[in-house]
Image (tube, rainbow, N blue to C red):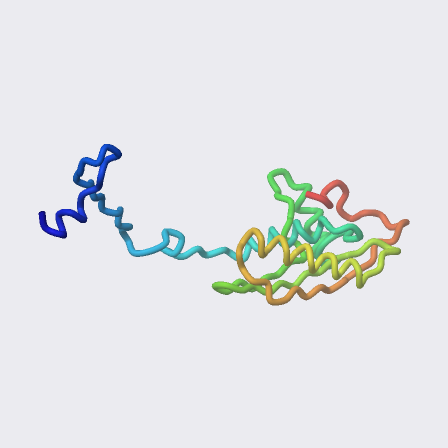
Length: 161
């Protein structure tokens, strides 16, 4: 037998020579990782909703948006078929791999505004980056009002929705 033929054979436990079966490896079609085939785009509104929900989850945030937008939002929320404005007080710029956000919040009286702003920033960055994969380059926060304990609520029941 030639050397090549002998290399393509294996010995059984009894010492007999048996031919080996060679299998071909499966070749991936399309060239590479399936996750890299195609492009995913994320609309500004998606990032706005994620950021709005994440900001509202922070203790000390009473509402989002300026007084005027909250007033219009409260009216819109009461109209049958109207939707809750989760994106109120949130503006975003979304690029291919990065995003920047501007938030306008109303805080509860008595909370440390700097601490609330930091918590909002951290919560929003974590939520947006985890859910979208986008890098958040900045989160600018404008505190437009303080909710005093004796003030009437402009938007009853709709705060956390």
